[in-house]
Image (cartoon, rainbow, N blue to C red; front, side, top):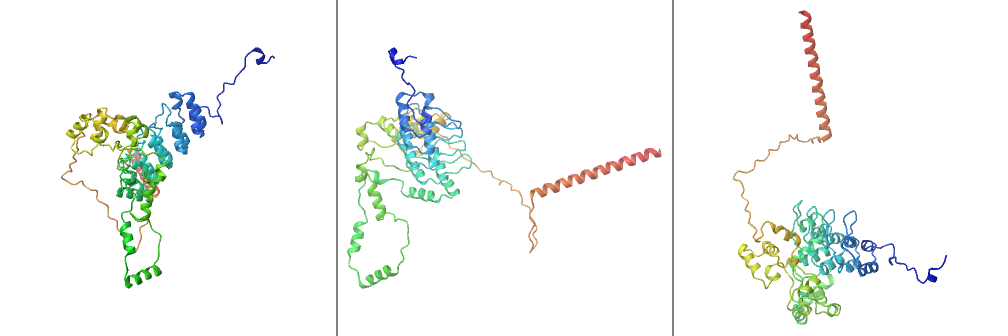
Length: 427
């Protein structure tokens, strides 16, 4: 056997350099191999390879969201042919899976860097990502979804309960407390350009501390400091700790300004306002405008979605006087205006009313009240408890009665036959 080098050519190993047996995009995602994933994306992928599904109809992104592989999710945000709103056999999306698992970093990355993500997609039971996070007690995920524009009033199709009702039903009291706090403060003012990092109560507190006290006030204060009990409690609203958190997390803070570059400083996060992903903002606006004060996020209304087009706005205002109704958004979906910024579930429902006007449905009650079944009054003897009625015992008694009735019927038939036979013998 001659060596191949002596024949003037070399045999190269064309096997892909993949570790741990991961050779496809799905395997790289399932085994948490970001280096392998980068190599797979560099050599090029097809739509079939990207949308490779397992037995549960999960793709690689959904597996990474379930296990909390942030590096894999980061590597997939530029992957072609990726469907962020793909649903599995039960109707779950990648956002639902990450929200239910409580992976807050994964959820934040999906909301900020995956364009076209739909937060209002429902599974087979009618649950949204927000409802799933609320019923499992994922407090941080609930806050992130609400501040990104998730519908807090959306209800499921089985029980008709919203996220707040499900949190109360499942005993997630920390989630309920966070929802109440978000209702009290629906806007993150520290992320706005106009925020001033000053404590408004500072001058009043300093003046009160420097003021001269009378002897009575000094004695009272000394008694309070000596015999008073300091119990742990939550930080006060607009107090020192509250101001410190706001100041250190504001866009003017040196911790924030040196670590990141804020986009849309005039449009801070707010409850109910649709937050666009970074690729959507970059595609729609130039980079210079994003860093200045001329770009705002979409909040779901017509004037903020398409400020330059008056046709869609006029249609919505003529058909529906209430601007908060869903018809304003649906009319935009029907006219194909800014369709990429409208949730798919809302855009599909406009096939019945293409004009955008949703008719009002008036429910009239009948004049006569619905007859109610009269409850049987139970006779209760004083001083005695009624024995419990077991279902299996009732069934057993019914079977005994049936057997007894059949036995009596058979005896009657025998007697009748005997009578007939005796009459025939006499004749």
